[in-house]
Length: 171
Image (cartoon, rainbow, N blue to C red; front, side, top):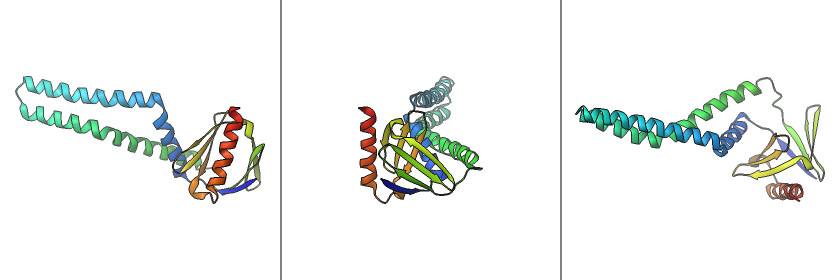
């Protein structure tokens, strides 16, 4: 059994949402469509002013169209981060932000926080995702457990445990 002490911050939740946004094909499609739609509008304006022989505005719209192609992803990242941060703050306003104590066992994962206790069967684990700073444990119910690596004392032991649990669910 592995004992963990975790205290999730708003940034942990925002990071999770940003990571899921990057992997969402519908959002990627919408962002790509928006980026090229605005770029096309800039080029259409440049073409209009080209035919009107106003070359200063042609250069202006071509330059801003090209800049927009490169700056749009940065803007969208900033937009989603702020959007998620506001929503996370609103959602977590009335929740208990105290530390939670996790016990990772052979058949179940238990979380204790103050006087509350929750148990998750390891058979309910759908998959385990490890990224640079986090372990995400996706459950069959659609819920995701977030484990920040910077709060884990024994990362290799936890990684081995999650890999074992994921392999059990696959087999």
